[in-house]
Image (cartoon, rainbow, N blue to C red; front, side, top):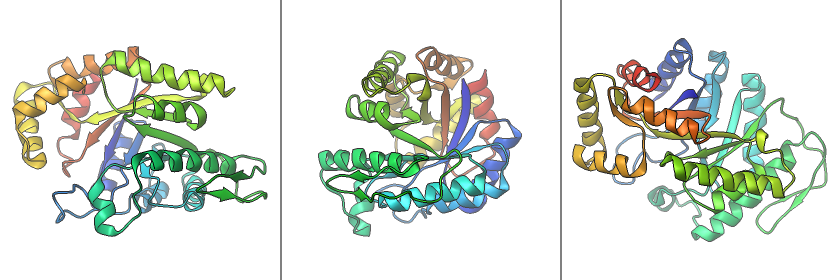
Length: 304
């Protein structure tokens, strides 16, 4: 099981986290694509994560750079294509572009970005993935849909290794789209039995589309809340509760119900290992507290 990190914040935080991740041998760094941090905390700054990833590209050497994920209504697929091939060039083939339907209602309302009904966003997501698959292909391949069209020409440049990621928590539509188009399918952390079910649905869709199921890399993500020492874990839990305006008791209850790897001692490592047995190949630790001093504590707990 590979371990990776997902973070956000100012450029200083992002760069420091990336440098730390390379020192500790993590597989990837992912950034979320949100124009607000939270819908109820408008005073907290949010940045364009794709620009942060571009800035990281020449300053890192081994880390995969992952967009996890961009709402489909933020950018036209042509913009995503050009962003992907440009980041592919700068990073030497280490970029993965992730796309999803979006969920943070306030960022669309407040910024005036189109935000159709969910079923329409799923239509747009499927067309966006088909468009990107055609644009990133090594040969000319047009696409014509209701929302998006790509002309009958050979778009340039061709990437060396840009990959498509489909991410989300949907139990049926998202796995189907991942099976049809994804190089990486990120299934948000859930109990291992549910993880296997969603991965199997993606594989079934891939087989029906004539794709090689081995070409779909399976990953997951969840809050980085773990420590080998109980005192360290309680410290992190309290800070996380304060930041999310929740209570330690509620966080614990929700994490247990959803199967999110967490806890003290060997518990978090055992939960990550269980996801691995369910098919997960990479786990992204989501570290959104804006501090880097606790990264070693959390990583050591997940590694066990």
